[in-house]
Amino acid sequence: MFNKILVANRGEIAVRIIRACREMGIQTVAVYSDIDRQALHVDLADEAVCIGPAKARDSYLNAENIISATVLTGAEAVHPGFGFLAENSRFAEMCKECNISFIGPGPEVIEMMGNKAKARQMMLLAGVPVVPGVEGILEDYEHARRAAETIGYPVILKASAGGGGKGIRIVENEEGLKKAYDTARTEAKAAFNDDSMYLEKYLEEPRHIEFQILADQYGNVIHLGERDCSIQRRNQKVIEEAPSIFLASDLRQKMGDAAIRAAKAVNYKNAGTIEFLVDKKGSFYFMEMNTRIQVEHPVTEMITGVDIVQEQIKIAAGGKLEFKQEDVVIQGHAVECRINAENPALGFRPSPGRANILLWPGGSGIRLDSAIYHGYEIPPTYDSMIAKLITHGKDRNEALNKMRRALDEFIIEGIDTNIEFLFKILNNENFIHGIISTSFIEKEYTLK
Ligand code: ADP
Ligand code: ADP
Ligand code: MG
Image (cartoon, rainbow, N blue to C red; front, side, top):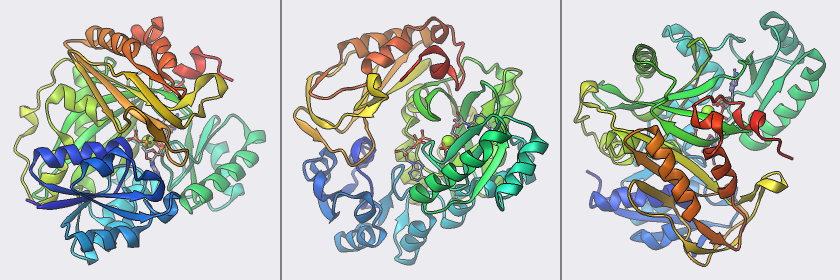
């Protein structure tokens, strides 16, 4: 096992990883930018190294500085969390060259699955259904136009290197295609420094259902069941739950088998997620694979009792999976709400500033993953997610009741949050009855 791990991230996921390490008796090194000196992850880690100015490009995305910090502190492994360098194959390669264990899959797999166009092709070869679309990337606008005509509108344009819902455009007809193609490319270039695009059929009101994979270095691959992440705003998840009430056991079995086939086809190692879209008839299609820990991993942890971050560390250190597929038992139901510093009434505009936390929710079945504390100044520089509230009950109804109760208790002053908006969704009749799709928020709420 490792003696010391450097956590190459910030916010709640850095805190989450440090907590896992402490429980395992592993020393931790935090990295931080100038603006994050007062951040909780810096305080909780055994050591902390400043890696540059506030701008992510100069600090949390600064691979050279992070590698230097790892070498200087004598850490043997780096945990990248999610976002930032988590899906950067060059960074994983640099770690390898410096004899540092990267807690995740190898650079080749990150490269392959990080490219959505390539990943699709791999899945086709593995016999995993994919959304009908072009094979490979789009050469130019004319290629996109012809492809859209063949596939039939509506279509969805996606940045091949995309993530976090960026670089995506839904196109209803040919009139809208040119503008969508141009703006999505510009957005992708700015966000991922890569403007290659591809295009597929836009499925109407599907569910987003994903499978959590764990794979060790000895060819053992299992899944920890699914998460339903259909409640989204602008292709970004807002509420997630596990299990999905939409899946009958035969469909769950089929999708789980396909997810394992997908992971095996790319010789996957460590924790990963296979994302699918599922239509009303129960047909499912591979969408993408995330080669990292996922924001919503806690809902799976609550219903399986498996600590996914600890498993990631054990796998990277050469450990063998200690359980088999049949040992995975699903208990009850879990729900997660992403709490953001933002103002829903003002188009979800970010609301950084000093957070005065008057009451944290607590009690039975409540888990709160967060990196803020009373008096903490939320910087304007990074993601607006400030906490993840997770509840666990014996069934969905109980988990939802606990969530309503916990959201109601939560009192933060000084900044705007989406807590009331989440509370509204939790009380929406369609949501309560599980009548949900990725268009749910758009359909139910007219938001400015
Ligand atoms: P999840 O799939 O785990 O729900 P998200 O899509 O919400 O993850 O992304 C988690 C975080 O990582 C967000 O802050 C998002 O902006 C960031 N992120 C995801 N993919 C990328 C990427 N390819 N490049 C940069 N940041 C990314
Ligand atoms: P990201 O890397 O940003 O997470 P994804 O490819 O996972 O991008 O897509 C994000 C979201 O966009 C999905 O969860 C889904 O809501 C929507 N989406 C993606 N592809 C399609 C599609 N073909 N049809 C309908 N919705 C889609
Ligand atoms: Mg995705």
